[in-house]
Length: 220
Image 1: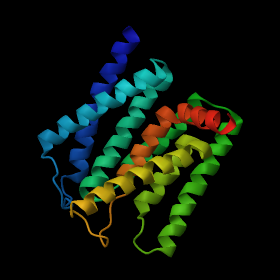
Image 2: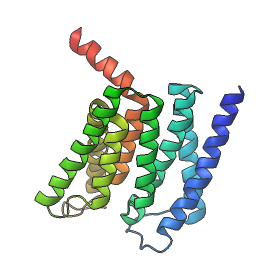
Image 3: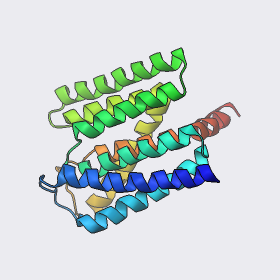
């Protein structure tokens, strides 16, 4: 019971800190066109997002050390998603914070194999996006490259593949809706950061269940 209370207290603190961080990051940046929330409503949105993330974390991970660290990781992902969606910015400070949290996640679940596979996933993810940036001008930015490397470090090779599936399916669905309601055209770009962050959060919490379900169907 005490650990559950502490987990929710951490979630509230992370919600407040996330709002403060986002306000500082975008206060002097031009917002992209869109129905963005004013600061007060954005704070409510971020706090609500943190509460939902904490409910899912408590459901999936309980109140162990992994749950506490996951709440902080999800807060960082939420801050990155909002800043990228509102002003097409993935701040280096937040990306570096995610990298440090990913290193802590590895340390918490440490095995030598996990260390090397997660480092390899970080290099591959960052490398693939770097090559994409070279081949397709304007497809991805430097922030996307660094974010993908951090997500690879956090998730490892198997789960980062699942993250990519979640991210690109979500991005495709949102793009299709925006095209249908004529809020976007085929020439318009969309920020990838929010969908990468969403896919990472879902993979962090649900990857074991998804893989169990997948292999159960495949081997049935």
